[in-house]
Length: 425
Ligand code: 5AD
Ligand code: SF4
Image (cartoon, rainbow, N blue to C red; front, side):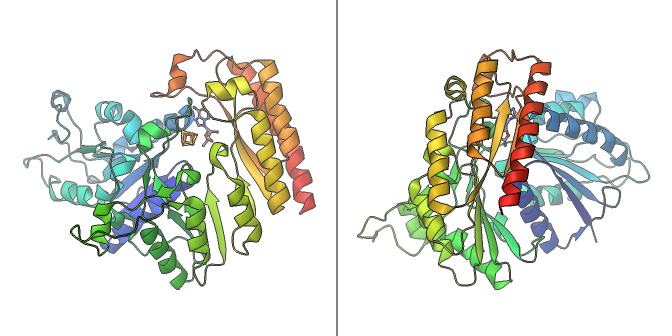
């Protein structure tokens, strides 16, 4: 029996993607390996949001060289096609298939292909559903002896809609909790963020498919549900005539009524109405289109957890504008005030320090939000320049030492606030 090992970096979306993929392999008869050494197939599901996460993966990939059978000689470089036939060097322990998948594949896959001859498979986030098929093709063409034709490398960096079958496997890590993807990609353009490039355009799963996945999980005892999207508030599903066809209407007999779009709040209500669902969470809302309607639903609901992860990123209106976030400090603080008043719930956030041109005065506004909003917890990041982002046009001019200092100040402040908030509960 072949064994697979998937190592995951980054966010909850990646955790869920790895789980869904592992499930597909298990259904194909693979077993889960304990470690890389034990595996026939090793996949790194990666994150590109910050530079240092990418550096780590580069060094892990380098260390896998000794695990691989393949040494793609310079001739492979000349071959510009996605699938190349490299020369082969067989070793005793050979034959592990090594894949770089997810955001880094899209972001730096072509460089990685040139630098690391032993990487067999490079697949972007939108194409993860193709991986079991690709691995099978690589296995089928794996060289058995030196004299045979060497193996196959597959690079797929297309953007597109994932096939629904990607979410079909029954396997879940957790007995009582299930994460359910509601959308892939991102329609926002925050100036620092590489996600819209690596994960592609926003695409929504149909409410029927999401509800069916929730019901399957509830039937298996997983009654805590987390809905996942880069910005869940962007969910607004409009049933197209074509998909109406798929759902039982024919194109010759279209529905006589126009269907109202399903908003995120509508979707939450649909999930809430499912018998057996006990707790609902969601990640991540964006402040610019988080509504009071959502807060009212949270207040009323016995199932939706009264916790909101609401990244504010920066406090100064000037920096927020440069970041293209679509709200001001005042609007953010009003949103938090209303959220707390309406729901009585808790709140968390993400912050970036040292965005280009950030002065001490700008930073003081960030500190002010931290002091006023009283978050349960905050993820605080030092700005790092990312390819394919609008912020590339700005010079990364805040010195590393200043970023470090601002980061330490916020960490220290938040530690105190978190302790006070935890005491209140
Ligand atoms: N530099 C630093 N932090 C970033 N984030 C996103 N892009 C960058 C970047 N270029 C942070 C944001 C986001 C979180 C997932 O990562 O705070 O909310
Ligand atoms: Fe990045 Fe902004 Fe989309 Fe979040 S909403 S993934 S920060 S572009």
